[in-house]
Length: 333
Image 1 (cartoon, rainbow, N blue to C red):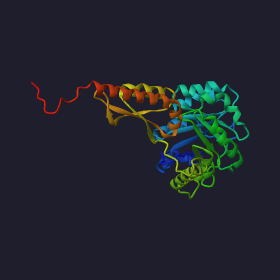
Image 2: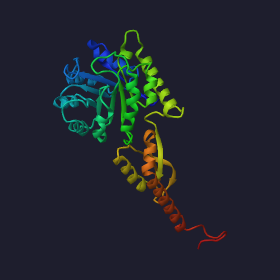
Image 3: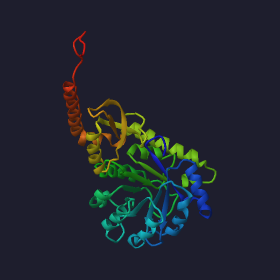
Image 4: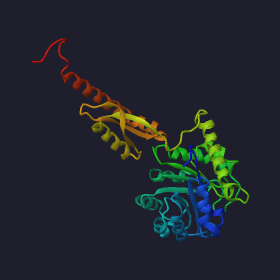
């Protein structure tokens, strides 16, 4: 994972398909955060690529996340194969002619991230019934089916902010992916619109391109766009950066941690460097991801403040009950 906010997923659709294992290793070594797998069946889109068997053979090549984009007519029929192949996230198209909610629930039950993609002409409102199940919204800025197409700027400008709003109530893990025509020329725009993951294929694997340099350029430009347009000019914080929410005695900190994690936000609990409680045990620090800190503060700040007050009152009561030193010069018998 890079040092900034934006992630780059390398689509192997434009890689050397005769040497996929080498290409996957090369992309990961170059700094790609994920491997994007475009699966096409020549029915839903007019192209044919590979299936779960190829993905299963690639899975031992790297520990990098595998992000599968199923451009197929019957995803439910084949979903178990892609889950078994080791895909970390699976995105299907909202336009398929089968019930969507059962697909998303099967993906989430398997412990994977579930996403919906939509063609350029499909309105974002089509995803509204499923927003509570979505980890990923994939905005297609080309017609699905072939790599190397021209980027649809107007679609990006309209749909990326809409996708961001659709995921606004998800405190952790919600991602807007942009797929189609993403390169060094369009990265700043999509970053400034709020995209989280830039999916790039032709821009990375084109002959004569330095794959690592392209990854770094796209990530840096997307972060620059985000800083200018959405972050008051400040450099965005790394995704994995954690910030302290509270410092509490363990007995008070553990229930607060459990409550926050119950709504989907990870919490790291560390031995603190500050106060020692009445039980003689040092307080613990509760850390949450910076990207979720405002959401957590809004919903759990009052409870955290009440626990801080409770801990302070317990310390004060303990100090009052402790015997003080005797009068100066007194001797014990």
